[in-house]
Image (cartoon, rainbow, N blue to C red):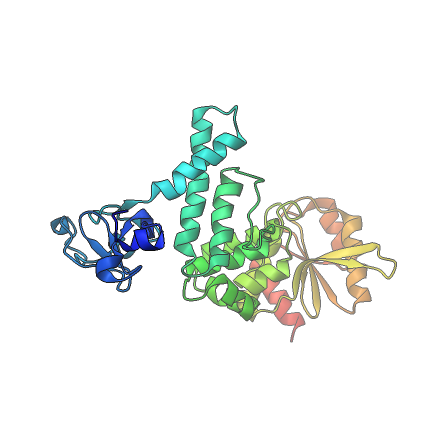
Length: 344
């Protein structure tokens, strides 16, 4: 440094914010930075003179720094801002190359782009909720692109649960309510958010919830719709009829796909659709007589009526079951009528 300057006297490093040279002697220590094209005042967060390329950015003030987006953009010379790739892509390339020394260039670039996007999106989304941002971007980078261990993470570095992901998605879809805020509100909070979506989207979310291993009751609580795992109900008919009855009678269904166990812990049977006074069995395909009679006895032991909804039933099985007093239903309208009659 020149003799007599404050840097010579104090031995201080003269570069600071964004790697730019400080102009402490004129503007006071740490207050002014020389970007080359103009001076930046850190107290104001603004440049002190017009942008020399202001005519290219008529939509914004000629004094702003990095188009008012200092997280995503960099204004290296006090002129036009650009994406801060040095902050995201170059470090990611170095990291991926070290972790995958034998990978080809294409694979390295794909993985590096994923890591760079993870960092960039985290910076951008953390303005609303850092927990949501961390979960969402790691879902994208690790689960979809297959980077790292393939698992979404929370801000604490733990594996994100399915519930974490639901709340994070809700917070991102409606920034006014972050995922963390929704968690404080509990199930009612997420129900409010999801309730604003159309029925087709809510149906997809409900199905996703049960496919991820959560209960049909939770899908109802969060989306207002019942869903069942397609491995157990291969056409989704039980959920479809449960939603039909709820629409007709106003949330009359208590549970869907409920497993009943005895005092010994062994499974006694299952209830496809449970109402207060009725157990409804849903059969979309083949009906086994012995299985139906077992479920009839279960309903009797609970003091309930039993209805068999089986649109495709016929032949000897149907005749035998009717002889034994089983109430067989084949259409939604007939099911509605039977439920209405029993609940009088």
